[in-house]
Image (tube, rainbow, N blue to C red):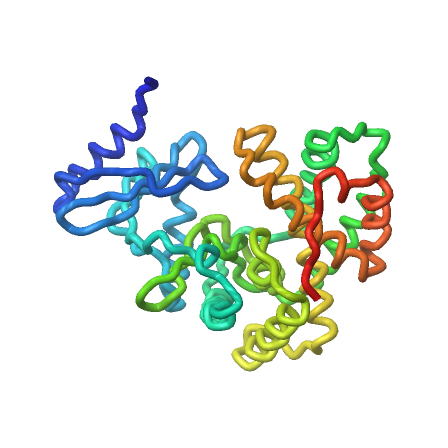
Amino acid sequence: MTQDVRLEQLTEWVCSLPGWEHSLLEPASADASFRRYFRVRGTEGTAICMDAPPDKENIAPFIDITRRLEATGVHVPAILAQNLLDGFLLLEDLGSTHFLSLLGPENVKDLYADALLALLQIQQADCDHLPAYNERLLRTEMQLMPEWFLKTHLGFSDDEIPHELVSHTFENLIESAVGQPVAFVHRDYHSRNLMITQENSPGIIDYQDAVIGPATYDLVSLLRDCYVVWPQSQVEWWVECFRKEAISSGVLPPVDQHSFQRWFDLMGLQRHIKVLGIFSRLNHRDDKPGYLNDLPLVLSYVLEIGSKYPETSELVEWMNKAGIPQRIGTISIPA
């Protein structure tokens, strides 16, 4: 059996902390990065350890963003101890029940009401010196799709891909994104990163990549989640409720319903095009095949929403003619 040196170092560090001397560590979760999480059980109760190898992950942004979000009043894990040199953090345990595990028609409105309220608070967080979600980053993200989804995953040759059409579509989506008002962006605000907690729910995790960027980005991450789908009419109702509240709270300038819905839809297309590439890369490069199960839903968003807008309809038409839906399977999005 291969020796887990970092786990041994992490255990030694935790047990050196006052009140945690005889702690036991057990796996809690992993994510799409190189970070690992362990649940610590000791005389002080339970906590979560983050293991972020310094040569692959930088925990300073996580600490910085935690402080910014704490100031808004949302529930993020309190930092109980830190070891910057080795890449270890001891965090408040927000439990193991995320939204996705309990979401259903009977409770989704209540859970999403909490999530949308928290999002309004997040969007008012301090954005000073945050990286900008700019044209370069938006473009770089979408370029993962032809490289990893079309070529690597589906086996298209370079000559089979309509690069000019792809590039033109990407530029249209970038233009819409950068034309929006900006706000603090969590960047992965969805059902697996929202924890159900007894107080001040939801508990919010996985925010270390926060940026300042388009005001609809986190909203579309939540409402057009890559892991769960809701009827279009319900999504549009949530979008309109959020628009009104955001204008009232000063997060958004006055913007009409049609313009905001268009921003939301095109922002979702940017995100889902990117995710097609990311999920494919996680499988082929990082040996994490589980994300392939979610490709059909993500592609369905691209095809359904993309067909409604002239900026994206030609790319959708090509994808349909190329047989991409049949090659990975798609699901029907409820009306």
